[in-house]
Structure formats: C-alpha cells, structure tokens
Length: 295
Image 1 (spheres, rainbow, N blue to C red):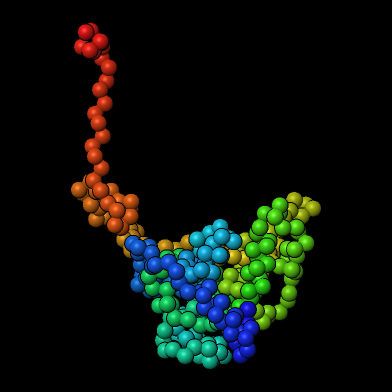
Image 2 (image 1 turned 90 degrees about the horizontal axis):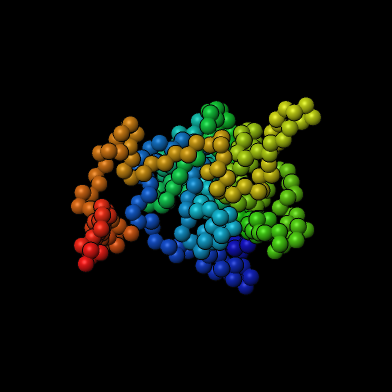
C-alpha cells in the first residue's frame, strides 16, 4: 500500500492506513512492564515485542493467534555507535537527538524507520534476547537492519501470511505459493518480523530453523524462509531468552513473600471491580443421626 505521492488512489491509501494504525484500545491498566528498568537493561540487537492496540494489531493477532503484534530491533544510542559509516546512515534517517535510545522497525504507512524507544513507554512489552550472540555479530545484525531504512512496508506479504496461516480447508494451496518463494538480496518492501529475521539469518543465528536428519542420522539445521516469521516466533524460539521487567519485580529467592499484598481480604476482577467475598458456609459433618431424623 503505497501512501506516498499524490492522486486519488494514494489519497485513499493514506486514509485507510491512518484508520488502520490508529490506536483503538487504551493503555494496559495496571501497567505490565517497568519501562524505566527495561530501557536501562535493553541491549543492541535485542528484539522488542509489542502488544499493539490499533486496528491493524487486531488483524495481526487474529492471523498469528498471539498477543504480540509488532517487533522492533533495538539499536542503542546513535551517538555511541562505533562504526562511523553505520552512525552516518542512522543519523540520516533520524531527526531526533543522537543520544536518544532508538529502535529500527517496519511500520504500515511509514516503511522501515528509526523511532525513539520512549514511543513504547506504558505499552505491554517483552525483550527477546539472542542467547550468546557475539558483540561483533550484534553489530552486524543492527547494520543489516539499517540497510533497510527507507524501504516500504510490504502489505502484500501480510496478506500472503494470512493466506498461508489460514486452514487448508478454506484456501487451496496454490493461493499460498507467493510467500514460499525465496527472494535474494535486500527487498524494497518488508514487514517488521521478516526484516529482523533476515538480519539474524545474515549472521546465521537461529530463530526457528528447520531440523532434519541426514542419511547417517545426524541432525542438521536448515534456514527457514525469513518471510514466514511473525513476532511470536521470537517469543517461541529456544535460542532467545525472554526478559521481563514487571512493575513490582523480585530477583531474590523468596522476595515475593514481601510484596505489598492487601491484607483486608479484597479480591479483584479488575482495577475497578473489587469486593470482599462472603465467608463460605461452614460444612457440617455427619457424625450420626440428626435430631430432625429422630423426630
């Protein structure tokens, strides 16, 4: 969906895109993530998963059957990037303070862009950290993603993914073929998860590879088509550690015993729906014939 330029079709595309990306759900209440701690602990090449609140997020949830609707790749602070060529490329695509913490992400209506991490303050977030990724390869992952800056968002790929994940009884297999094709090189269009998956494939870091045994019974890994990845795959991958920072966290053994639980017996269905449950009726154990029975 090309929203740049002029003309009736592009005007309509811009209107539809604006309607799709507008948030329709409120921020999660209570807060599910300690954003200040998250921004202090996040590392370059970490994948940030977001539970979106827009109309297009609801569509992605239905397609992928997962609450995670968006993935962004953490870059760090542009001013601290050691590679001068990469730093210049990032500066060309970011108009904010070079000391801001930024992420690379593919957004409907904007393409692949740099955004400040603070954009996601208050959202439901999760960090997926590539386990054991070397510092040099983390730089290569970020550099590969940065080469996509300025490319368009691939709406066609999103539609193909929906067709691929639909039950076989609804769509014939021949309608699913376009997404299964391999396209080498840097595409001019991409979606958030496939762009990040391609960056990790560039350094041969596994996400959800295909596992097969060769003729001698040895297990072999085969790269999976990066166009098939969705945000939930980083959450499911055994090669990524899941990092959460709840607002009331505990890192020491038994520290949960000291959380500020209410002691008045109140139980809540939600933030504005709390009550004190009525005491359960005492159970009367039968120890012999009752007086009523004797009468």
